Image 1 (cartoon, one colour):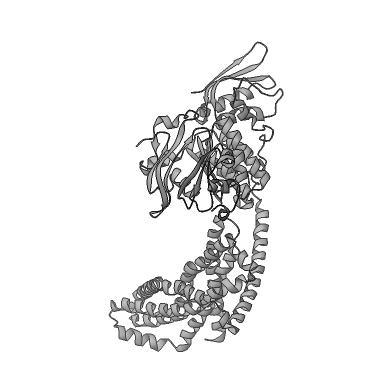
Image 2 (cartoon, one colour):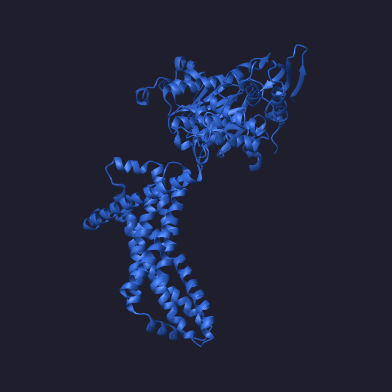
Length: 370
Length: 265
């Protein structure tokens, strides 16, 4: 173990005598005592006698450096530190270690933060507009030159984003139909109007919930996956490699994903509609309404235009979810946490955009009387 | 099995600190190296050399407890690394400092936080001491002016140096460096070699360095083993300068004189 003895000579010098093994375990005890002993003797010569130090590692050297680095007159003096430990302490320049040369910047003030966020939003908006333009151009090019589309990628992504996503979309839609039916059947029963639950579910699922729920699930599953995949490629400089090979990353990475989403989202939406209705029908069995009656009632309430109103949305949602996922992926900065951030941003901005655009659709349908 | 106290105390200089015996290594039963047998002496700067794909890094993974060997043993002082259970093995290998090929810094932490992390978790030193020790380690590798930077904001060579600083945080008895000089400019690589020598001499740290950088081999290393893929094992062992000048084995001469293998085949 290490020990520290503090004494004052008749000449007014303060002597710190260190002995034993100076390592991290010893420092725990000594650090505060030693630094205090020096601080309590301002303007007096302080001498550290290290003649009895048997061993000193990097942590022990830190104690000597700590005593040396604070500017004071006269400077602390270290005596009799044996080789090779003297050479170890000499490796460090106390003047350099006086202050942290690269301290973390202080947190910006609230007003600065508002400015930073606003500037970020403005930059992001401009980037999104540019991305929409680039993507539209790439898609138009792809549709006029279908042989240049990387169909192998399209099918692979379609399988992952579409077929593999079917179970979750089916489950959520089925449960959604059941819950909707339950929640609405109980109050409607008081008026003997439970048969109209079929109208409600039919309209709600086909016009609104089918496309929206599918798109939200897709944003969580595939939007995040696109962002993480492209983000990792960016971090690994794969996107740079594409660019230097003369390949446009948008055409190479974004187009197949958007086409795959465009093919799959409407299909998933169809499944969602059917399973939502089925869920409602199952619930209504308990209220004494047979399957056949339920579907005949739903059929009488829902027209083709209601189905199309929802179905058209699913195409737009597909472009939104896939596009925003790819954009966030391409915007990924360096570092491992950046990929996670890109995936989070893809889901968050994807869902916000979906809801906003769904609101716009509702307004447009109202004005157009659809 | 408990790690013995003999390993915790400093092994006397010149005694074997790591003993590798009859070791076969590789992936999924497919051996890259067979019958590997060598000692690393306390206080020496030891090199594992070999061409790409010769199994240098795999052998190092066996030594630091990351990958079980197919056969054979690795002893650190008196402890058998691979016969210990997982918890004991973690305790044994926590006494090693390891710098990985890419630096392996935590991307969401600043350099200072990266170096502070092992100190915060393994010691109960006062805040000020942890801070100073971490900054000293960064000063040793010349990064004292970048303590607040994130790894992503630094060049590859700087990340590597920060990786060394983190590996040294707890003053380990033995430091493993995986290709320390790759990706560094010659001047930085030379100062890194000087740093390794200085640490070995002033602290008595044992180094095990995986490398194929010949400039570093001759300036920094005391003793090396040379691995070859074709031979699936060690083809030479000893002082690298002597091997270069005196070896009769054409494979060894080819490696140390940077001659293409066909020329000597």
